[in-house]
Image (cartoon, rainbow, N blue to C red; front, side):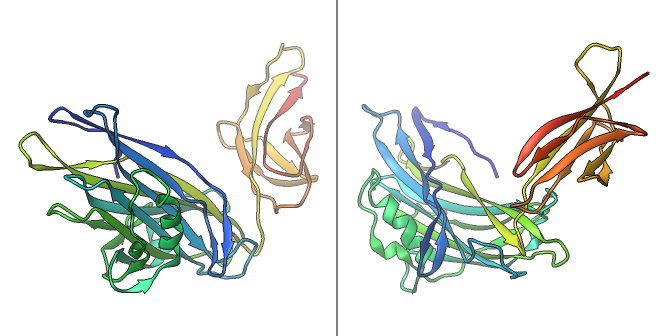
Length: 315
């Protein structure tokens, strides 16, 4: 997936995003705040806004849960000012990490479904959420029927993402929506916080000097949310380092030092001296590092933190 700004036959299309990330509860569950971008035509006097697009994701839990296949619905919509500006593409993609910070493969997002709007079909709550924001964003005029979707659209996945994609090769409508449904396949043996990153992209058709349609993509806008399986976790990033007692500071990163949490060895730093721990949220822990019999200073944390543990040796 690529993001770019395109110059075409003297017309400059610019996209910029305004993030709104606050989560909200509803009768349907919860949803992320709508984030959106607008596209303006820099070739015209005053750089008029010619299109807008935005996205939000609906989810079922805002607290730790035992569901090993939580459901999510992501929605993206785009609306143009009309004329030669038409929607040609909508794309939603999802990626994530497990509680150990390891990237999830695309096949961990299952049950992929995609519906296009506006069509005579079923009401889609997440498309209503996005509509309620875009209806107040220039260019005005998006219709409420964009909340209703019907025809199925292509979905897929690769080694790191899953996605839904809609496009129109022949001009396109003045407004369009896409609802992407997916589930997260949780590892039942790995409790903690799974991060989910959702990216939204829209493209519009414009006309060149000869009246021919030219596709132009906006910028990708993205947001994230967490799913806590059984309980939430937080990240503790540790740099282990070392120096001999007579040497001046600073300490130098030292790999393969043992890392202790609450006086219990929990692992060994990598060759660059880094170690990451993922304790349960709401707990407090004290860390230190050791090289043989020599220990470092200690550090106590009760939430996300990054710090250095330096071992000073007599030689």
